[in-house]
Image (tube, rainbow, N blue to C red; front, top):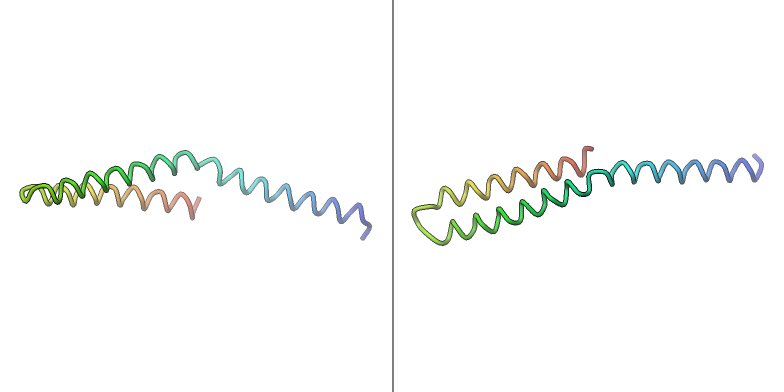
Length: 80
């Protein structure tokens, strides 16, 4: 194998890595929004849960919705 062939194969490898990173990069903004929504819902849910005895189920529901968003974000991160 000549030196020029080795350089081309190295360039091809670098190009594959770039394409793979671009594929993951297209979901970064969506993942950030889902992560922020999770944090906000978790904080609101904790405030509702501990602020009154009458709304404990509502607080748990809000936290549950936040957890579902976090699961969706993890799915996007590891599967797509």
